[in-house]
Amino acid sequence: MSENLIEVKNLKQYFPVRAGFKTLQLKAVDDVSFTVGKGETLGLVGESGCGKTTVGRSILHLYEPTAGQVFFEGEEITKKNIAEMRKKMQIVFQDPYSSLNPRMTVEDIIGEPLDVHKLYSNKKERRERILDLMETVGLNAEHATRYAHEFSGGQRQRIGIARALAVNPKFIVCDEPVSALDVSIQAQVINMFEELQEKLGVAYLFIAHDLLVVRHISKRIAVMYLGKIVEIADADELSDHPEHPYTQSLLSAVPIPDPKIARERQRIVLEGDVPSPLHMPTGCPFRTRCKYATEQCAKECPTLKDKGNNHLVACWNR
Ligand SMILES: Nc1ncnc2c1ncn2[C@@H]1O[C@H](COP(=O)(O)OP(=O)(O)O)[C@@H](O)[C@H]1O
Ligand SMILES: [Mg+2]
Image: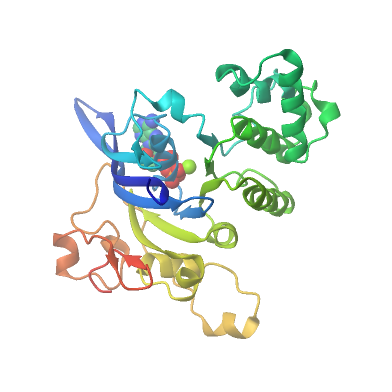
């Protein structure tokens, strides 16, 4: 059996997009590879639109991948076994307002996966499991018959997490699970994810556009830009020694509490906009905004290279 829980190999997700009379391929995810260990968290960061959600959804076959493979404990996930695989892998969505039916009771939302996978033998067992899950995520079990719309954003996200946990998964894609929440609530929900991991040994792909959010919870972090992973390293290594110019700019925008260090560090502001994924630059996707870009960068796209310490960077100049 493989040591990795999840292995993503050369994943591509292209969406056909009509442009006038032509159909163009929007390369939302373009040749992405990474692994997630058992009980571990891999953070996935990058600006809005770089393909993070698409990676998460493609792993769960919510989109049929254009190319590439995803393995769960060494077994390839396919159209045929995906129904069975969904007992082992789940997703928590970004927006707890649109991802939960407001007219369903909490009990029925959490009970749905139990029904789908027939995980109880009688009504009593179903109900006990639901109440148990509510407690696990810090919800008052007495509120089981209330409707989703009666809950706050943070509580709704807890309902979403309870629903994901219902099948006892080993892996959860957490797609910006705190981005829609008030800052004051974000830390509570992140702490809960960590506690659940300790208790249940579940692994996460933890997606965020904010590096601060993932740095705290992740063992390793992958940085995405325009459909590609440009850097992967252990969370501390990435924060302390970012190699890729894009990661450096992301980190330079993270506030530092120490004013002395903050003064010494220069904020790197990227020029220009992210190119459209419909009109990708030749070579390295980042070169149009990179101050180190050379001729080679326009010709050929760099692939991830190990710089030692399990620190992978895709850059010709590193
Ligand atoms: N179903 C889809 N059809 C066409 N384009 C899509 C679809 N989903 C996402 N995209 C495009 O793919 C790119 C990546 O989107 P997404 O994965 O949502 O990025 P992120 O989660 O990092 O914000 C964007 O350009 C987006 O417009
Ligand atoms: Mg997204």
